[in-house]
View 1 (cartoon, rainbow, N blue to C red):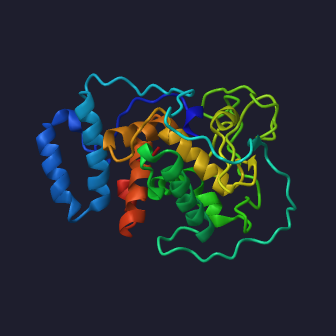
View 2 (view 1 turned 60 degrees about the vertical axis):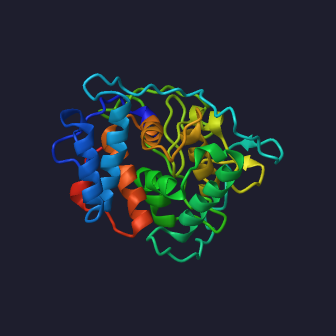
Length: 285
């Protein structure tokens, strides 16, 4: 998950699909977005999100997003299921791959099923969030290409555990994150690494852990659990995904980079429209 990166200013290059809203009047940005929507819905969607964020605070003075790891939506209901056990389950490595066909959106069937399942649960448990499955799919596409193109068994468990690099300072741009779970979730001692298809740090996973398939276990390597946990995390703090500014703020919580927001929203928009983003519209994260 993006929190293992060093904090970056919310900036973009001139070639990005993000409008430089701080340099033009908000009305002009809104007009441009409306006109662009007819020919380029991906670019217009991202432009709209950044314009809305800029309306809340001028771009010249807007401070970097503050990540509140302990924010929890006060109105979210507790799951009616039994207490959740947080762990990564050891499974037979020779399990068969799921046989769900690729969805019309181009997303692996098992991944799309998990995103839609998370949307439905959140609609019941946290209706004020209004989380669309396409937003979760955008995050999943950027974080792990939908669990490495759907490499999971029929229950949504990864056929091979998905791990990020050890956050020991050896990679440029990443913070040093010392071990928080004794290797219980990430299988690594000394330092943490992100886990599962939605790439959570162990400590954050433990805080927001959700049981997407209702089996009593919250396993970051299970796609149903991972997508619901991601939804809870993005919704936390009472955010409403129908508000572009709040939606942008939620994605920045995952990775404090406007380039990351552009990538997630470009893919989310593509899953709504069926129009895949062009490479030039995806700024480097």
